[in-house]
Image: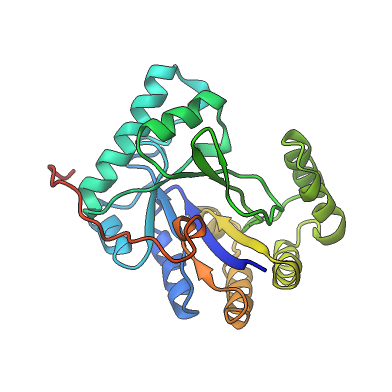
Length: 255
């Protein structure tokens, strides 16, 4: 039985460093998906570089562009540029991509593959599936977002993707507005039955909604189950033996 857990954090806000401190507190890991620019505040190149010393850094377009709202040419440029500029900053290969707001068309998967990414993270909720390869790239779903959601949000998310297993998990495990309890129930499910428990969120949103205490409690339980549910980066989910994120790339001018 394959069972593991992971975390991921979107938008590159400076409060990502607070998330990183909590993960380090419980000896957990994860992946931070960082745009170079955003309407909200983003980390500086130095802050991104510091974070990359202990965590995987993934791309989130160069300017946090919703790909379904721009032309194919702009979308591909945003994807390519995000990978190149993050590799400039960190000096390591950027292997993962996350779609802003989770919105994509099939063509965007081909763009991500052509750009050299190995995997893309989606926002399919209440999933415990292992990464699946589609159109030449691995897709990684999520389980629980660090955000209070109405039951209907989970239902629409699962119905839109025809994710029958996620809809079943909605009935059996989701607790309306109580995301920590939903997370603990799903975490225990993965411990029993295998799969992946994937916790994700936005640090700026955690601050806005004052969810830090709930996050701490869920991370603590993840740490308690670490012997049976090893915590991996998103990239390591597609290669359980581990992925070397320290491979150097040709030096370019930094931001």
